[in-house]
Length: 249
Figure (cartoon, rainbow, N blue to C red):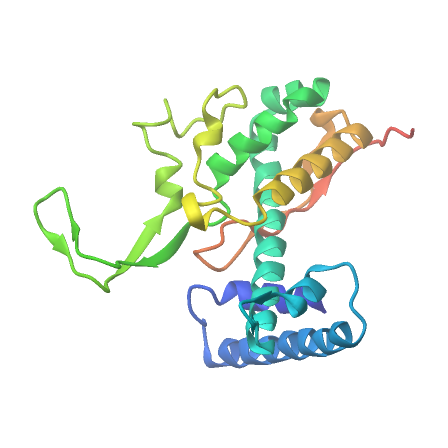
């Protein structure tokens, strides 16, 4: 159920594709909000060691978060963490299968998995762009000025392929020394809250897959990859892969 809610809402980050999709988004949003609101009510009665309970008890100078604030924050964290990591794993695995020599190298040396993960984040860019609002007029290089209040589209995917930062930026290279300079998780005060968790999830997933199925030559597509329909979130809806014989511990 949560997967269905997440997929429906993530596909609408650009805009609804149809009236039916807009209605599906409303239904998914209402269902997720209702679920979290009910869970919040339970946590207020009987707090547990989790984020929802912590948010329910936060107080600063006598002010507390409203239920709407808490449910909104929880929804954002859940959906952001769910979609981005899933798409990194799917699209990243596809890229590895397109670069067999590097894939085999990682399988033979799992110490390369963290570096591979950073390069996959740079190369794949699960979040292609995001929006900001100009809080003050911004002078542009051509002499023009962006007025205060204008919406800014930040192309993270473009920054991650910037030739002024990354040599041969369109080449996938697990040995790229400065891969971690990517902006896949944003920057500054807006740096992704779950960056450390996303890295850990991806590294653990790839490590376990390669421990169980180390013969990367046996990894073969079992069908056509299905891309996500949206533009903001880059990844795959499905990646059918035949993994070959498993190694049992």
